[in-house]
Every structure is written in structure tokens, then in C-alpha cells.
Image (cartoon, rainbow, N blue to C red; front, side, top):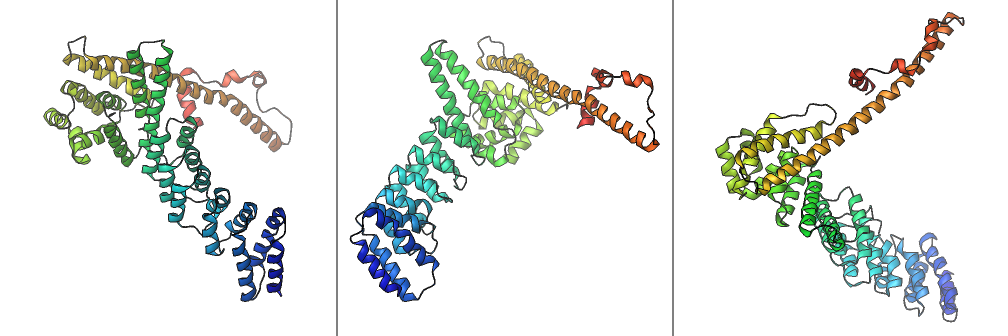
Length: 442
């Protein structure tokens, strides 16, 4: 019976308007996937859908593509044929069909229009090979769609290519920074691009000398790079060092800044890369602290000889200092370390033209400001905790008062008359008690 209906349907399709033909596609496809029927009837409907591939109206073919795209059991030859159709037809299948292989998607990325690339980038699941193809040849919109897709698996090398090709696009940078799986090396590359753009605008503005702009931008980039080291895994440090070395950013000033911030593991990874030595052996030399071994290591790593005293002083201070767990400790540690390094380095340097000494003085000034900011921030936060305590104390007293009244079965005041005159100030700890109060609240 349905075979006869299919024949009538095909006859009707020859003369019906395009709009009506497109509307009739969905019932045909729905019947194929939802209605129980003999194999002969199913083959007849499949043949009818195959004939629709040759319909002169793209609206009809687009309707067929949209109806089949979500079906995991769609006839494969129909899906493949629709992929080869014009872009506005193929997009529905390329963006959703689970039947397409990575090789077919990669080919579509390589040969397709920007809209096709974007549709593939928005698929519910995008494999690493397909992501690599999009990052390599896709347009900006497709790369943004890919990076913003939580279902996209993106390899480290693909992130790097995306940054290299489109890192200057601000909207893509925001999407990249929002991804938790963005490698540390890619983050640093974005930081460098951002600081370079800021430098370009400053030069165009002409409000300060170009050399001053260069110094500020380099310092800003180095400072942001060191900030990336907080909480970084060992493998991340190795990858970052390799990226910095290849890109020419693994400078003496960056290593000094990292040491001054207490990032000994970063210094270890850098020396291991530069000296081509195992990291554990490098760390043992740094920890042991024998000057002859250190100087031999620095020389093998091709560090500038005039910087040796600064690194030796930094390692000595690093072995001596530790956090003291007081407000602003992280910033104060960096400041104290810089001050001691500066003092010891000045014993070796007797020239007012020493640019490394100038950099250390500049870092010490920055560290002093950061230490003050960190101290104020932590003290303000601690005081905020303390200020919450009077209200909590009053509430507990009121609760205790009610409980005692209920237990006594009377309305007698269990406190002295003077208790009514107590206010919040009576519960504020003295300045010396701030720390104990904060600890108790925690």
C-alpha cells in the first residue's frame, strides 16, 4: 500500500511548487524512521529520498539535509551526497550529522566556505584532528566558534596555531583566556601580543620616548609572564621555558625576576633547557649552593657572566628566606629577597652604567609597592572579618538569653542591668587581638 503512495508522492513532486515540496520532505523522512513497515516499503521511501537529491530547488534539498542531519541511522549515501551539495545545503549535515568521519570533516574544512568551517566548528563534539584543521586553515569566525565550543577537543599545537594566526583579534583573545585547557605557553604568547599592541598605541600617541615605551612594555610582559608561574605544574614550566627560549624571550631579566619572586622551579627548568642537563641534577646543584658548581652551570647555560653574582645572591637568599605567614607575606618575601639580592649584587658592581643593577633597583621599587598593596589588601580583608564578629556575638547572646528565659520559665533578666547599655564597641577586639579574632573566625 505504501509503495503505491510513494509513487503518487513522486508524481505529485514533479508539478508541486517548491515550497510545498519542501514541506512534504519532513513527513516522508519521519515515516521512514518511525513507522514499522515491510522492507519493500522502506526501500521505496529511501528511493524517494534519493530522488530528492536531484530536486532543482535548494529549499527541498536543504529540508532533506535538516531532516536527516540528526538521524544516527540515516542512509549513508544520502549524507555523503548532501555534504557535496552547495554550502547552504551541506551546512545542516556538516554541523550535526554523527555519521561523518573526521577525514570527511577535515576535507570539508579545507575546501569549504567560511560558513561551512564555522558550522563544523560548532558541532556538539569536535575531535582534535578536526580542530587542528580549523586552527590551521579556518577563518577567524570559525576559530572563534571552535574556541568557544566546550565540546571541542583542541591540542596544544592547535592552540598555538590559533594564537599565531589570530592572536591580535581581541574577541578571540577573550575566548582563549576563558578556556581552562589553554596551555601556559599559549597564554604567554597572548600576553606578548597584547603588550606589543599596547606598545604600538603608545608609540603612535607619542607622549613618551620610544625607548621608555620599550622598557615599560618589556617589564609588563615579563611581570605578567612570571604571574603565570603561580600554581603551574612541572610539565607546564618545561613547556613555557621551551616556548620562551624558541621565541627569544628567555632573557636574563626574566630569569632574575622569576628568582626574585621565589620561582626556583622555573629557574631550574630554564637552566636545564639552556644547559641541556637533567632537571634533577640542576636542582641538586642549586640546592647545594657551592659557588664553583653554580658558576660552571651558569657558564654551560650561556648566561651572561656579569649576571652570575645576581643569580648566586638570589640563590643564597632563597635558601635563607621563607614565608612568615603574616599579612602581605607573599609580596614582602619578594621585597626582602630583592633587597638582599640588591645589597649583595652592589658589592660586585661598581659602575653607575650597570643596566642589570638598574633593573634590580627598578624591581625593588616595584616590589615595595606590591608589598604595600598586598599588606593593605590583606589587612582590610582581615578587618572586615573582625567587623562581622560583634553582630554575631550579639546574636549569640540574644539566643542564649531566650534559651535561659525559657528554661527558667520566667521573664527574669539573667544579665545585670548594665548589660542593656552594652553596644557593639564593647565586643571589638583591640588591635593586638585582630589576628586571634581572624583565626577564630576562620
